[in-house]
Amino acid sequence: MLGLAFKWGDLPALYWLFSIVALIAAYFFFEKVSIKKLNKAFGAKVAAYLTQSVSYKKRRLQIFIQALGIFFIVVALARPQAGESQQEVKSEGVELLILADVSESMMAEDVKPSRLAQMKVELSKLLDLMPGNKVGIIAFAGSSSLLCPLTSDPNALRMYIDSLDINSVSTQGTNIETALAQAKEAFERGGVTQDQHSRTTRAILVVSDGEDQEKGALETAKKLAKDNIRIYTMAYGTEKGAAIPSRDQFGSMTGFKKDSSGQTILTQVKGDFLSQLASVGEGKFYFAYFNGDHLKKFTQDLGQLERTQFQTSMMTQFDEKFTVPLLIGTLLLMLSLLLNDVKKVISEWKGRHEAS
Image 1 (cartoon, one colour):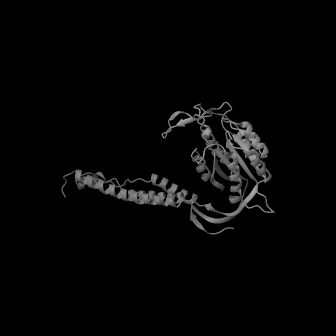
Image 2 (tube, rainbow, N blue to C red):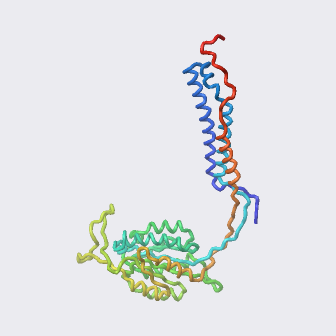
Image 3 (cartoon, rainbow, N blue to C red):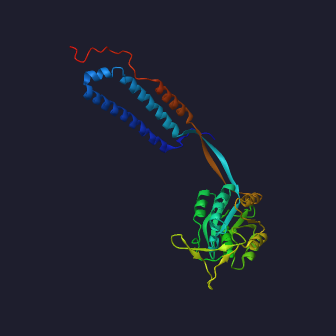
């Protein structure tokens, strides 16, 4: 559907029109100042002779054409748009909840700069690899917290991913069972409503080092799989493991975490547990390597699932009309460069003190 609507694509660009006023005001100001200085230095008669080859009318015409050219350039920058059209846009994808482990063990530096830091960087990359899906973020450790409900807004998701740290939840530890239970609630509250005629494709991605210290995660995963919610897992860290740094309020390392007996805690990736969790959840397990293809493999597997139509909306489009004022402005500025301010008639010097 076409219309005759008109709008500006970048309305604030019109503020540059004030630069035209400033340009003209500056020209007349400096013209007046220069004439006054010449008259003061040489006298009005000598100054008139020295400047007799200069045409102020031509100069003013040149500045007028330059101002007009800038006017059209500014109009082009503001992107005039006309010819409104309506286009139907369908949004399709899957509903995905990312369960991000923010337990203290994720601060281990067996991968640089840390497991948690690597996870955050890769989750941001993951958003670019799977546009169109509805994604939510749940942070978990000993307890879990829904940071971002299901949304298609990648900027909001990145904001919550950047905010992930060990203080995102109130209790430390690693309780994946609680996080999975909260994911099911988040699907029911914020997902597309399912009925007898429609089914929504839902999946969970658990990103963790796998150090689950609570029982029941596997049983919960089986129940979710029966509800057609697939569970994928991604391990961060190394099987060799590393100690957990202890830092002060300024971020400086003061040592390593120790247990009740005073021994340094060594945290290792439990890939077997995460693999088993993905297996009972009818998903797949991935090990995160530096410059690995685990993100690509996950998006490919996710893309094989049936896609759900989330919503149908009408998108308004306008035809850009900035090319005409841009062309006019460019031609006017080029024309101003061809003009000069030279007078053709020059009087002969008869001496400074000739008789009147």
